[in-house]
Image (cartoon, rainbow, N blue to C red):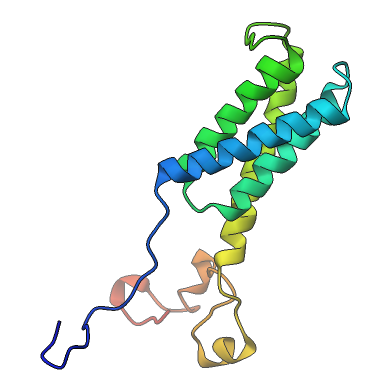
Length: 157
């Protein structure tokens, strides 16, 4: 605190603890499992996997903590295999359950990718005109003009 009573530190938003994010994600995955069990018959594994994948991907787009996303994805896979593909939490049943559970991982990866792409600020034409944004990396041969020797230091990037 300064003498005039104003704080000299900037106010930052506190991060959600990983455990809280995992608990919220776990609740989302349980709700998705209940919805999948109610909406699709036991023999319809693709439909049940689709509902779980949508929930995992949606969670991954909202939560920034990758540890929480990984934990919730793993718990969602175990829930799908143990309770939706097999009975009574059996994780060692037929291999069909685990092959469909890979769709849940794929949806989580897509959700994380979407969140990362959404967090990148868009480049504007003004930024490109100011030279702040380059269109991409230059190829290695573009750094040295024709007829100059890079060992002599007479080139510019």
